[in-house]
Length: 283
Image 1 (cartoon, rainbow, N blue to C red):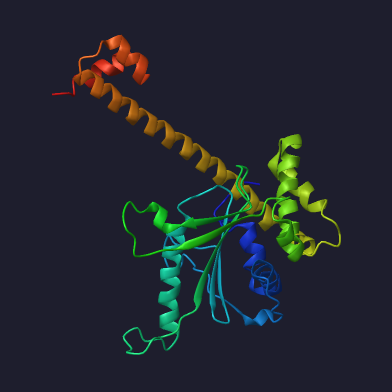
Image 2 (spheres, rainbow, N blue to C red):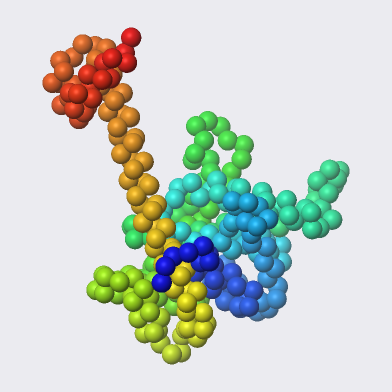
C-alpha cells in the first residue's frame, strides 16, 4: 500500500472526531473532565476543514454546552502547540460569530464558549503524563495574551486512570503500542498494522469499526509514520544548520581576533578550508 493524499487525517481523529461515533468523543470528554454527560447529541463538531481555510486544518474541535473543545494529536513533542491552538481558536470563534447572534460591538458583555485546549501526545520521546504548555513562554517580554494547552501523554501505560475511564482511548493506546512492537519484529509496517488490528480482543469497542475501515485506517497509520520520518529528518537538518551557523559565528569572531588557524579549526569544528573562505568575507 502506498501513502497518498487520500489518507491525510489521523487515526485518532477518525475515532474521536467521527460524527457517527459521538459516544466515543463524549466518553473521552467525560474521562478528561470527570463529568458524566450521557447525551452524545450535545456535541456539535466544528472541526476546521482546509477546504474552507486553505492550509489550516485541526484534528478535532466541538462545542458542548458552553465549552469550545480543541483537541490535537501529536506523535512528536511540540512546544509551539499553544500558537497553533491560538490560530485554530481564532478561526473557530470567527465561525462562531458568523453562525450566531454574537455582536462584538455590543455595549453589554457577550458570552462565548470557554476554550479547552488539549494535546494528546503519543510519541516515543519520554514526556511526563501531563504538562501545561504556555504561549507566554515564547514571548521575550511582557505578554497580554495567554493560551494554555494541557498536553496529555496517551502512550500505553501512562495516565492509567484516564485510560480506565475511557475504554476507547485505552484500546487506541494499546493498538499503537502493538504496531510499534510488531514493527520491531516484522520490519514491515503494513504487516505490523494488520497484525495489531487482527490481534485486538473481539470485545474491543473499536475493533469492528477499524476492521470495517481497515484500508483507510492502514493508509492513515502509514501516512502518520511517514510524516514522522520526514519531521525527524527535518529536525535533524535544522539542528545541523543551527550548529553550522553557530560554528561559523565562532570562527568569524576568532578570525577577527587573529587566532591561529589550527586553534579556530579545533574550537569551531570547521575545516581549515571553510575557515579560509569565511576569512574572505570579513572586512
